[in-house]
Image (cartoon, rainbow over all chains, first blue to last red; front, side):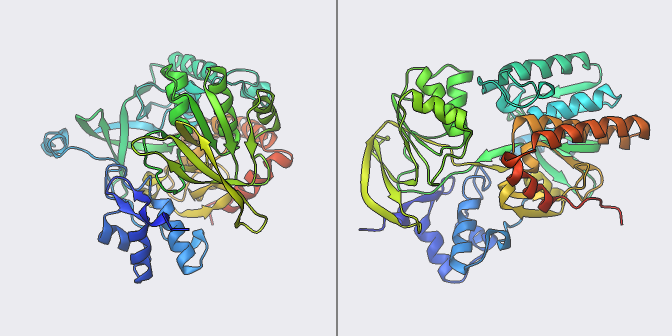
Length: 95
Length: 366
């Protein structure tokens, strides 16, 4: 049976497929943050809420380690998109 | 820069309970919630709760939300509620929380104490075509149906036989939606038997030891392929094609904890609590002394225990800001922990008790 799993969209925000994620893990980029920098997974509007755990499971499987040993990466503010114009015009800049 | 004595992030069952508890003891409280309406999942829960009278057993979820709203109103001179407002960042350098109301107002808050009651998010499992329109999370289906009165489709395949999958299937069936079946990977139903029995009495098939292989359809869901899973985890038998226009995913929740990570709280992965959670002492305080955690954000459990954890967090925030004596604190605290241990008693609570034992450090004081 043909393997359709490679075409599954893992990160919907940035349209990254399972095939791409597995390919780069196999090349040794086996942390979430490395994959984020290479593929932009977790850098879209949902900031990884959709894809992070799926990718962590792929990393765990590929390395043969438990999920508890997979680093989920750095979480930076903001947790959802904020328009630059809103940031630029807020009280913060006037303090 | 705004300020408040206690900031509660999340206005679901845990957050509202925390806010009411802290305010009733004299704290100035700010509650932020990303949704338009407070109440979290409670406002879409039309089923009756279990447990004891203190935890509103026999009352429907949305009615419990109304009870909390009334308590909020009784303390309104000390509680500021900001709905449609997301806490988007916690800056550990100075303990400032940044927030966005709607899409157009950005502001910062410097709270003395923070209660993280950010709840949970739904898990998704990867399968081909799971991005087709018609693949929903069960939470979205419940919102459509029970908040907005919109049917998700005509014929639904439910994936997951935990309480959410079982209850949402029943509610859809009551609303006239055909349920093609409930698919469950495990060899047994994950939710309560009473919910499974209601589904079965309405003739809904439950496919235990089955998994979804793919969604079918070109521009939207027209079906799904499922297959039996053998005792060793491999696929056995022949794939079955199921006709449906909706695939509803109820495969579990995971704690929402981005802000806890940003705050630098010590985190730990606990499978029984369904993901990474903040380590906490026996009063729900995280490794950052000014931050408490409550509800699903502290580990996936139920609204009943979330409400009591919220009370514990609110009580502690009030004590730490000098609003009650140790004697008053001890009396309330022991009452809440008794209620929590009652809720978690017996074989049903075994998993959660173990999970908490992994995340709880007893005391941060050396």
